[in-house]
Length: 302
Image (cartoon, rainbow, N blue to C red):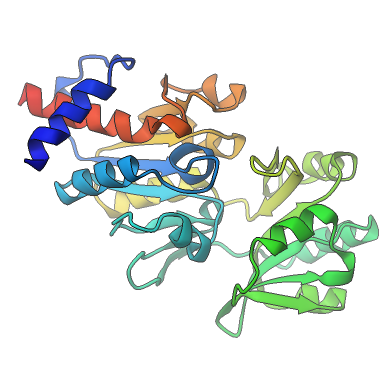
């Protein structure tokens, strides 16, 4: 009964996407990786029941699916509740790859000591970021409450009760631990110069938050990227091809290295420019519908 309804749903919902004839690809092992916010997740930061049903059905049938997000594993799991993803997940924009079941760190990228110079530079210009680190083997995000901007405070309010929260009072406390991710939320005129200053030395993402419109500057180790993590995961799972989905500027690097890359309809123009094609929006289950059609296309040919 489920299979019959599944096929009816496919024929009813999927009309807009055309695909090239790639019969040889049907016999190649493919890893599908999707961004979360603005791509798989709707505007209210949830997955639709349709997306959950389709992806769970496809992964249960053998499809290799994972996601790559700027979120931590903690917050990613909350917003993807109901999704049965048993494969390793790419988090913190590629700074880490973690096992979704055991939460073991499989791949990690930490800053070298030269990051302290960057932080002192930020402090000198009255920019006090949220800094993610491991302190005595415990994951923390630290910030100076008295220096928090309104944009930072709005973000922190959405993380109330998070066990990783670490409020500090001094710059030295803020820099403590093994650092791996820096998030600055402030006025564009303050942040943009630092984007240009450090973009060639570190992996830097400068963009507006899709939920609040606040300007963010995120700084990561140079080797930390969705692209690098996706390639490593592809190798780990012994896949032949990588197909990715996204909506934002922080997905561009992943799009450039993938065999196929699809931007959702609501994606930024910069991402659409490097995409293989455009699929439905995040509000209309674009990724799930694409995966569904791919599955039916393969079964029809076979």
